[in-house]
Picture 1 (spheres, helix red, strand yellow):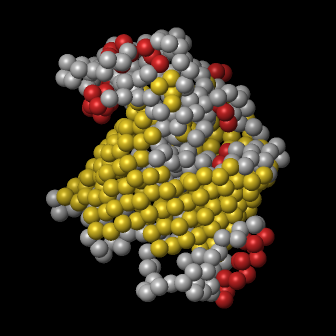
Picture 2 (cartoon, one colour):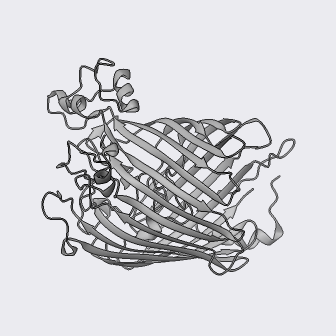
Picture 3 (spheres, one colour):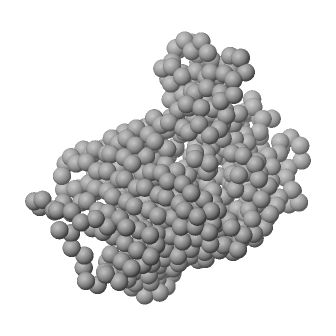
Length: 490
C-alpha cells in the first residue's frame, strides 16, 4: 500500500479542510516506477472588488478564474522520460476545477508523448511557451506566453537543442497541427504552428548566441454567423495547407481551393503571427546574463521589417550562488508602431512595403482574435477586452502598448522563497502613422503588482501566499490575494 511519511501528516488536515479527498490507496505490483508522480493543489482567492488581481491570474494557463471569492482545485499525474533509455514515453494529466463566484471544471493538460533520442512526437493538450527569453520570470513572451489554456495539438520536433559540430551549433525545431475553439466569429478552425531556433556556441561555453522564429497561423473553418455568401466557409484543403505552411504567394504552384476569396488569393491564407527572436547569453561562474529581443510580426509583412521595432526586449540576470535575490528580469514591451511605421532597419536596407499605409492591429483579425478559451494566447500585457475596465468581447482594442516590467525572485532561507512581478503600462488604440503619431495624452495608464511567498514544509508539502494590487484605467482597481497548498502524493 502507498505509505505517507510521518512528517507529512500535518498537511492532510489542511487538504481535507479545503475539500480535497483525492488521496487514494492502491497496491503497488512489482517494482515501483519512480518516473510516475502525482500531486494535488488547493488555492483560495479573494479581493475587495470580486476580481482576481492581474498578476495572480496571468500566465497561469487559464487555471485561475477572473472572479472571486472562490477556490481552485488541481489534480495532476504524470510520467517523466527515463533519459538513460534511448526511447521512452511520457504523459501528463491535469484537471482543474473552480468553485465559488465562478464554477468550472476541465482538463488543463492531457497528452501522451513518445521520444527517441532528442526527437519526440506528442498529441493532446500540453503547457508550452514559445520564444527566446527568461521563461521563469518573464512578464509574458510576445506570441505564445502560457497565459491561455493549452491548445490541443499533434506535434513533432526536438525536446531540446540537437548538438552538431561537436556541440558548437545547436538546432531546435517543432512542427504541429492544432484545433482552435469556437468562441470567436470562426468555428472549426485549425492552428498551424512551427518554430526553428539555432544556438551558436557550446552549451556550457561562456557565450551563447541564439536566433530563431516562431510562426502561427489560424486558418480554415467557417463563419459562426452565416450570410449566404462565399465567405461563409474558408479554404481548408491540402492545397490551402501548402500555402499556409510555406507562406508562398505564387498561386500558380498549386491550384488554390475553389472557396478561396480575393483576400486569400491576394495576401495570405489565414491569419499569420509570431516573432523573430534574438538572444545572447553570458555564463560567468556565478550565474547567467541573458539579453533578448522578440520582434513582432503579423500577416505576410514580417520580412518588410515594418514591425521589427515592435515586440519584447529584456535582460535577465541569474545568481546561482543563492541569496536573498537570485534572479532579476527587466522587460520592455512596445507595440505602437503596428506595421506602418518605417523602421530604422527598413530605411538602412531601403526596403519598401506596398502595404505601408495599413495598420496591423495586433492579436485582432476579422476571422477571430488571438485567444483561446477566452484568454489571450500571447503576452498578457496586451489585455483582452473582456478582462478590462472598458469591457467588451474577445478582441484587443487598446493594443498599442508601452509596458515596463520588473520581475525579482529570491530566498529568505532554505525553505522560504519569494517572488515579485511589477508592471507599469500605457494603452492606446491602433493609429495609422501617416496621421500624427501617438502622443503621451493618447495613452491610459495601468500599474499591476504581486508579491508571492512559498514555504516548503517538507519534501511533500508546500504552502503559497500571494498579494496582488492593480491601479489604473485598463483593468479594475483591485487589492486581493490567495493562499494555496500543494501536496505531492508520490
